[in-house]
Length: 47
Image (cartoon, rainbow, N blue to C red; front, side):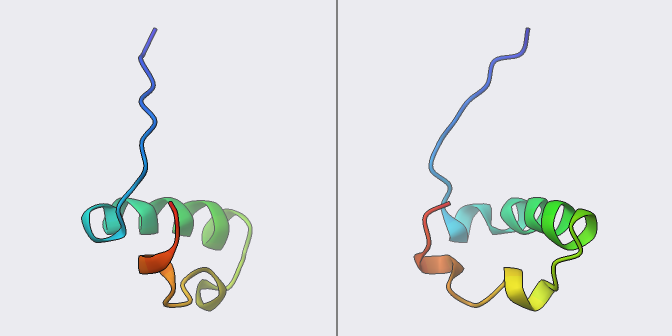
């Protein structure tokens, strides 16, 4: 069984991974407009 690690993400350090997940889940799978998922407030949000 694989171990799962949970940690608080940092937007500057984890930006590419966070954007990838959000694009796949929200933009591609759920057809949410990209402009709604990336509002410029990510650096101050808890991920």
